[in-house]
Image (cartoon, rainbow over all chains, first blue to last red; front, side, top):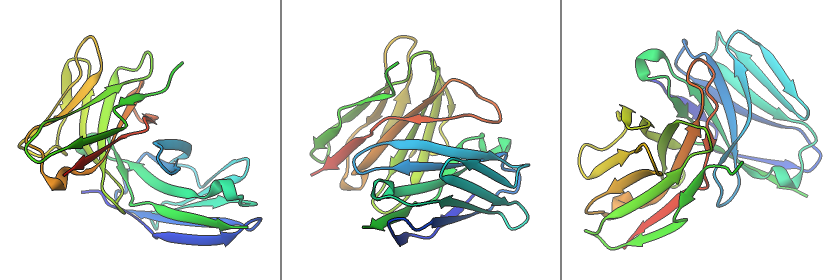
Length: 113
Length: 115
């Protein structure tokens, strides 16, 4: 089956860059996603990348995909206190697993001012 | 366009009671997913429904749990005879497009506490 792993916690200073890493097991994943969850709220889609891309940039967010190593990262430039949240990596599973999204356990990002 | 609406936000039940969680998808969305989030864990898939059909229930416990998405009205996740281990946040997500890139929009969740 599929599995998605993330580091549990990251602490950065305001203004620094944050890099959140994720590894996945399903080599047939077509899309990979990053979601953000603020306290008491649902998940908000931040960005996604198609598996034939290496990089995608969206304002302060940069997604890097190393398909060979099944490694995905999310870089947040100029991290702000409002970026403090839990960040979830998710892969869109293969058709044999029903194409559903499989989530990692989430990385808690804490931004210190 | 209102987002995915879940209610109640918080639900407290005693062991043995029934819990009903409701989810109204975004307007025009015909696909609903239910996920469960336990403390310090990621979201675990439970069930995927289209209107009047259960497409994939591979993540649903075999007993006590059921889900429906009727032609009219919200999707309902029903847990019978709740136990303490059912305490979790239950999230609903809806989408409009199936295919290779399906964007899920999540509700704010229902926090179920079983006493």
